[in-house]
Image (tube, rainbow, N blue to C red; front, side, top):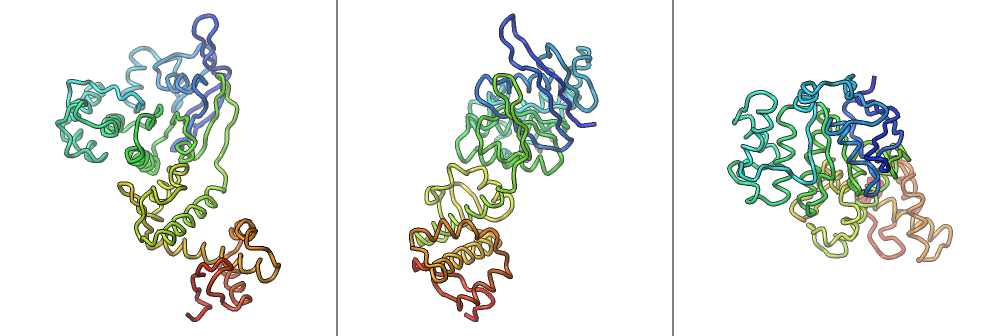
Amino acid sequence: MAFIEVRNLSKKYGESVLALRDVSFEVEKGEWVAAMGPSGSGKSTLLNVLGCLDAPTEGSARVDGQDLALLSSAEVARFRAEKVGFVFQQYHLVPYLTAIENVMLAQYVHSLADEQEAAEALRRVGLGERLEHLPSQLSGGEQQRVCVARALINQPNLILADEPTGNLDEVNEALVMGLFTELHREGHTILMVTHDPEIGRMAERRIELHHGRLSEISVFPALEEELIENLLKAVWHAREDTGKPDLTTEDVPEFLPNRATFLLMAQEELIHLDAGQVAFTSHGEWRAREIIRRHRLAERLFYETFGLGLDALDENACKIEHTLGPEVTQKLCVFLKHPKTCPHGSPIPAGACCGR
């Protein structure tokens, strides 16, 4: 049995507004799913039904074996307190309570408030120095991290997040999404509503809603790895062009349209991404070096062997470089007699076969 089972779910408001139309899907325990679609597509309504903030008009929604429509008022309150952590775009913090008191309030709903436990939850999200600050004294990103700490305080199995980065700048978005990545690795089930394809890319799978209907269920393809390799190349090129070992995100034009993938690269320890700075880790630099090496060898092959013009080399090298394994790359280097530069004059990193 899947952790979340949605069957023929519909939600109607009044006589004419059908927010959800016969929606069916499943989410396995520990899975991270992004619910995407344009404004008004039913994403938030779906989240509200799964969090028992709203009830379906037709169909069913089951979470961890419980049919949510059959729960009594007391059971709904217990379900929300014990099994679900909510993270909203609008932070919903009590304005006259401090950060730690806002987190303790969520504890109180569940059982007994524990100040030490609440403080530890805030430290986990990087707010150990902000425990006694009111929401008005916190930035938007800090308020959202209080919301994440509040959502986690009762160790919920399911985290429901509705546009959690919608009001955040680039740096705070990276911090918050880093927290969600960590939670996913710990085994939490996450259903996140977002309209941002870069945020959706971080999930294992996405569901697409349009006009209340489920239009697509997709597993992200292996093209993710190819994208990461292309972005490692972009950082290498930026470093060559600027002559700087440590770059800012502004030095890498590919950063903004691929910021979530850059965050994944940081999580995988391919790059350091800190306060607008971008730098390779030792592993990332080695991997980028190998990618650049095979790309420029492929360019040299097309130039010398097939006589392609300079303007066609990059495009054609991109088509084959991802298929070149280490052994083939070494044989290609030997065949080309260990060239030191590509046809454009850029250096080709030496390999073990080069003796230099």
